[in-house]
Amino acid sequence: MQYSRGMSKAPAIAVSAPAKSRQKTAPAPQAVLFDAYGTLFDVYSVALLAEQLFPGQGQALSVLWRDKQIEYTRLVTTSNHGAHYRPFWELTRAALVFAIKKLVPHADSTRADAGFGTQVEQLMNQYRCLSAFPENRDVLQALKSQGVPTGILSNGDTAMLTLGTDYTYAFEAKDIQNHVATGTALTAVDAPDIIPAISGKVTKPDGTPIAAVSIEVKQGQTVMTSTTSGVDGTYSILNLPAGPLSIYASANTLEGLISSAFQPAVLLTKDVNFTISVAYALGAISGVLPPAYAVKLAQAKAPGLAPDIGHRGLKIELWQGERKLMEVEADPNGNFTIPNLLSGQYTAKALYQGIPIGAKPITLRQGSRATVEFEVPGLPPESVYNYPNPTDGTTTFKFSSGYDLLKAEIKIYTLAGEVVRILSDGEFDKSQMPVYRCRWDGANTEGSQVASGVYLYMVIVKDLSTGRVEKVIKKLAVIK
Image 1 (tube, rainbow, N blue to C red):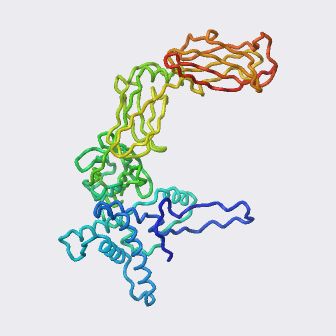
Image 2 (cartoon, rainbow, N blue to C red):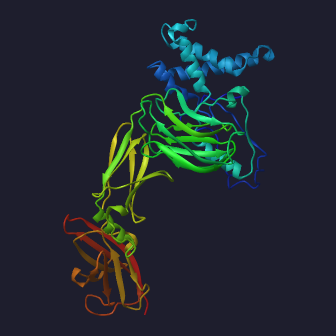
Image 3 (tube, rainbow, N blue to C red):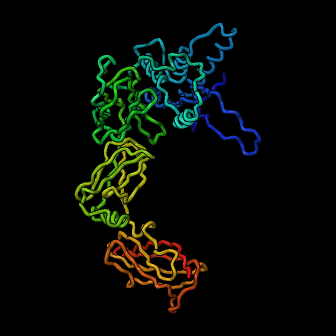
């Protein structure tokens, strides 16, 4: 058995394609087996809890614990051909006791009244719930999609690698110590054919709600449905089929951990409340987008499709990666707040009447408050075009702008950079603002028709209230 000391960035598992220089394609694997500890599971994730129990020694204790665990395993495996075998769980406990006594002054494993025995149990229980490396899910799903069986080859005993009948809901994250959840469980015999709802709340120990936590309901490995906790920490999932269900809660944090909570797929549960038991400072995201600007942004992006209905049409969505976590409505002045958030990388997206009008990436640190400012795009590139294109000499330029007061100009160039024609602000049709049009008759500055060829044109708009200038360059073709 080759032992791994864990990895600081990523587990050593990958699916790679054969090099192009090879003449023969390697046969597809019949199965892929993974080492559990240090490859699938991050053995050093226990350092977070260890640091809380033994301040200043958390990281060192996790390293020494792992080193002694490996050393003890080698000794009992190679000694007298394994005649002195002891279960891996026992060796893990012995390694932990050694590490604590080595690093923690006055620690004595025989003094239960000193709290040492309780601390050992807490850390051993944490070892049953090691954080998985986040990359593993994608790799395992890729193998599954290819029909490749997977399994674990580990010296861990069965009790360490299965959940058994432990009905703890584990919520792992930075400085979260104990894993606590409450709920009323129903046996399959008592369960109805359709569960009207599975609902619950995600909170801190003091009852403060935690928002934007992902909740997934699975049957076996199949995700039946998912949702997220709202700003009040509550969630609700309706009309699920009866059967063994697992309920997972997760949140990506800035600390690089994937928090997770679960109910083993043994019992049906109608009400599940997840509680983190150690103080965690929550943050918030707020901002303002005046409805009048929101209307202009939407009309600039989708002319005619965004009637003005005031602030009721303005919504702010919170995303993390490709997953939408939640949405909130703005008040009549366009103010919005998304409170009770864990740290993480988020994106706030503004929509008016369902039309995307802005997106801002946000790094929210623990306990901080982030302010979002959506800028008014003066010249969305996708709104700039000319028709017809190609043209036989006459074409119309069209664009949209979110500026209230602007000065516009279009410069037409040859590919060599020579100015062919400048269309000034007075030549623009502004009767359908925020959409602007300008017709070009195909003539140059001297009044002569231009020759066939490819030309560049630059649309320039200036916000007269701020002096801000935006430009977009595109091509047009003249064919005569």
